[in-house]
Length: 407
View 1 (cartoon, rainbow, N blue to C red):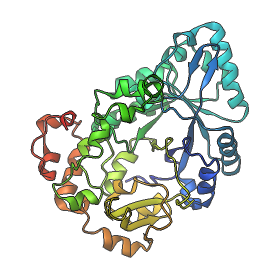
View 2: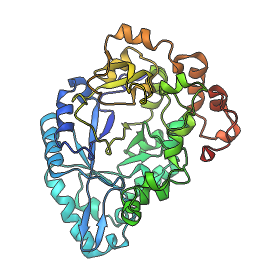
View 3: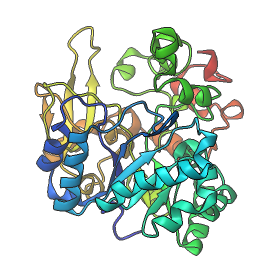
View 4: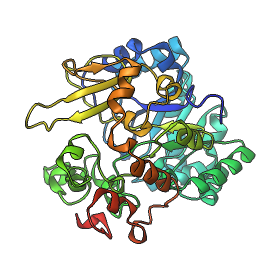
């Protein structure tokens, strides 16, 4: 058992998509000191432009000038590093041209001079030139999770390219044995590993590469429709389908078949330790978040119970809240993975903050049932080979589904 699996453990997204430029800062400052202690870094998007060369962000959103100033305030006041993200998957070949490299180095230097010491770069050819590493020797270089590093050998290859923090693919969430091998080699090489905790992406999704190219704005620019409007038959369909335990009741609790995503399915403190002991940083997503004035400004961890369909009321009958991951961990508030859904809440939600009451309310939750706990143990090592397993399908009573692409 590890001593501490939460302090400086979480890489969180800045809400680049939020129109209120101060919402993130105010939520951050209203969070508990312990919650802030648990943050490893805060990553934000930006875009480099030089003549007709554009290289930036796969999500299609960037931090505004005010957002960036607020992030610098957080870094200076709280000592929490901010992390520049340039993770476009459409890499211009011009980026390895000498004049473009020189301009790009000047672009990065502006952030470097501001004290930014962590940067995500997706352009592997640019990394291979060594220009970035030579110009900014103190920068922690991250690759992007979109590189899809799903084996220890691939992790080593990216470390040799010059990446000092390797973001592993979501596949590792279901392959604990390989995660242990990767951690051993990462320690030997003196690099860090990062693992995305939660992502509503189909394992090894066949649409992902095209999605990443189209979603940031290409679809809207060329067709007048967003990716989600234009393409109704990919993740937009299986994220919303009643793919639950066969009952509307469980679906309304936010309980869906784990096959529709690649989340870490950690039920208890012991499960969490198995992952936390074998990865340096846990990453959470959220740069597209756009929160409205009805949201309470203050970070925490939330767990929705008995979620009522929006067409009826629009909020859960119980919203469990704690101030930090430490509270979840030390009180063993199972199931752990259900606490990773939200960061803030709406003002009219009925909050439950008493630990004993939280335990009582969540005791009979679907993921606290014996058969669900057993499934979580399988998911840690199943490698997403669903066609030959169907353990999820059996528990959720959906019948054997060979591929969720058919949903």
